[in-house]
Image (tube, rainbow, N blue to C red):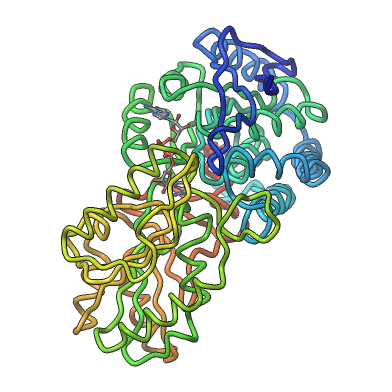
Length: 472
Ligand code: NAD
């Protein structure tokens, strides 16, 4: 019998009437554990607990808030081994490389850094006429909804700034990867006041109930563009503030005449990190037509050294696609590319078996208008598109609804900076892709998101401005 995981509400373990099996994507015959299927009653209880905790937490001292964030950081590092194994088993990512141990390190790092951020009062005017102070005050109960690709790190990105700024939280993880979040929040509750952070698990409909709940005062959502639009519509009903971190289809442009071997490692991991299941991964690469063969050789050569396999195997650096729906989508996009002139110069055929492994795949011969280029593939597949005129590559990079990250690769600093200026994205990287850090604001433009996370700007998104304006 596999282990049952439970929800945590008001500091208490809460069971459900129904449970669902969570399977290992590296071997779908293995059940990793059972997740509770929460319902509206659990949601109501969790919101009520968060509201009750907010009544005192909103007046907590700065020191208490810093201590709570540091306590979360310590929970992540003290329990890193257990949580990383659980994460690998339910998500598929390897323990090593840019996998589960790396993700747990990120959790502790982000929580610890966020503890150090502050939003002090600002004196806006101090004159003979008035004294005006701007304060940043908490919003109330934060409803957090997370995806399945980096479940723990994203949970920390939502929870920690929430409580750092005086709010309380109800989090609902993805139904594909709920176990590690249920366990992490259970562990947090051993050190935090009851009701500060509550976790409920369930399907998409529970997410919709959470975003439409009257008791939620702020929504932070990370997931697909399609769902993000629904979340925004739902929030509109009560004008609830939202932070939306949505999908990306990041373009990289390599300038003409560069030696791609120099960039192969950065390009490879910039696109294949977490087997491509990363919002800010490079998902299409534009190279000059004269540089295509050398780029293919460099990337295919580099890929040959990167083992993909069961994440519990120490040698694995890449894991499977996380779930069947996503696996089928990757297959569909590659098959569509093949039918539309694409050639897989690497990969393109999964080996089969009771798992969702899809090999690292590099596709040439496709251009804009083919689904693999125009849509977010979210898997270990990179299309390389050729250009003859750099202007066309810039227009193509900017031509879609996405605007998360973009990158430019080249050895002439002036030339790369000039292209970076023209790329339309929340973050533009030069000679790298997919780098994030807790002190650097991160967010998408266009359909890739609304608002930023990280840094002071990210923290401010969990507050509203309150002005105290006194007569002199
Ligand atoms: P998804 O939108 O299918 O699901 C995300 C979460 O939303 C899940 O918890 C799900 O249960 C919930 N949900 C589904 N329908 C809902 C509704 N109507 N109302 C409220 N919640 C609902 O996304 P996914 O497939 O889990 O994640 C992959 C996507 O997330 C990709 O597009 C990826 O680019 C994006 N993503 C973005 C970032 C970022 O920071 N920009 C980070 C990671 C992932």
